[in-house]
Amino acid sequence: MLQGKNCDVYVNFETTRSAKTSNFRKTNGERMFSKRVKRAAGVLAASALLVAGGTAAQAISNDDIRPDESSYFGWHQGDPSGGSWDVLWNGLYFGDSAQTQIINGLVDSGQRGEEQISADELIAKVENSGVGNPNGSVFYQIAMYVVPEGADDADAEWTTIRNRDALTDGEGIVDLDPTADWTGTGLAGGVTPGALGEVLDAAFGEGAVYEVVGYGVLATAASSVTDVVWDGETTPFGYGDPIAYGVSGDPVESSVADFVVTEGTSAVDVCEGIAFSQGALRYDVEPIAITGETAEDQWRVLTGIAGSLDGLYQYTEGDAIDTYGALHLKYGLDRDSADDITLTPIPNAPEGAVEIEGGDIYPFADGEIVALGDVVQAIVNNADYSVWVEGFSLINDGDEVVLKDLQFYDNVNLVFPGVCDDDETETPEDNNEDPADNDQNDDDDDDAAKPVVADPKYAG
Image (cartoon, rainbow, N blue to C red; front, top):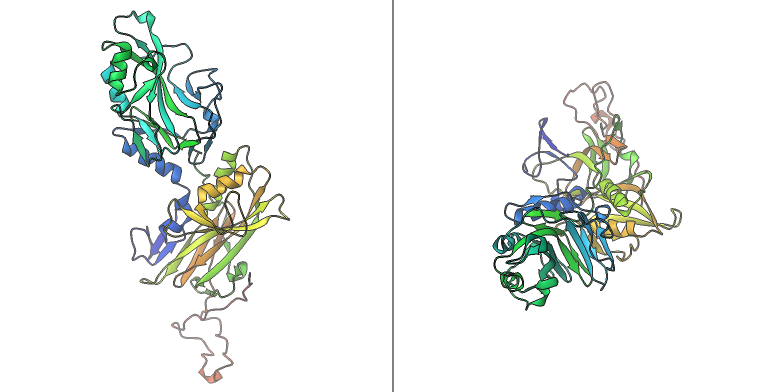
């Protein structure tokens, strides 16, 4: 984690604004890559808090959902003739107009439920259930065995129930409403839709008992959800966390000469490090080809690299500080013909947006501002194109900072020792002044260090 330093005591810059050193990821909160790639975890935590007594589970990805009911237990597609679905980085998506059910079986095929509950107890569970961020047209479906009033236990009926009106375009966890109209299949489908209690009593009698064996979501049109909640237990859908990269090996002493200095940028080696004013410093790396067996694997790699830029800088208290990082990629059929793409963070944008610069990333256009997760998803979804990480830039839109060190990916570990004047080295003469004014002996301990300006390399 990046930190700030004041008199060799490390503090968190976000909460201690008087600290005199800080870091790239935390100086400008919404603008840093590390803040952008945590959406899945953030949604998971928020979802759990929105349901009283709720608990959060590990995100469900494509590998966790079986395409059929060869086994009922666990997450599976519940309709053998169902339409398309996919888990992307931020949720479960239904792709077309064919009915699709994604169900979590609580028992194996042919097994009865583990407990029998009354209608009132079932309604209480429904009240503590819901879906996260429904978009499109989503229904919540509950599968169960029912022993109707007066029937023998061996005569249990199979039925499903669901909300009659779709859940659409909701934010956060949208709770189920048992007082709204419900319908179902089997005996529950043979009565007039109405409040859940009324439907249950009309179909099975007031004394019926219920055994819940599965729950999930159903869609008949392009739709999506981020979470499914059953009786307070939240299950998020999405990719695993981005890979957390950390550098190994000893740091390498570096200077301005190791960067490409864009035109108009002031970057000077000084005693404390690199004095860096408004502009950009680009650092190129050996191209990193993004590979992986699945789109999820590649997404976790690329977002992990985007979030790996770390570093420490010094600044003057009270200055306007706005220093952050951008990511450089090549994206195309092959590296020689690929577009040079830069992803630049946009401040105070929702969901950690970046601006795409240098070319289109279908379906997004050059110049479009998009959530980082969505951009990376679009990149890895294109099986015909490849992507390489080419390097990063440090961008300063504020007052001067002094760079102390930098880390990126698993192999860039730079320190900037600076260039200092000392008592054993003569201060060079300034030919624009009277030589007599120079301190030829340099025997004053208070003689200020004179910056040495490296010849910049311009990127244009």
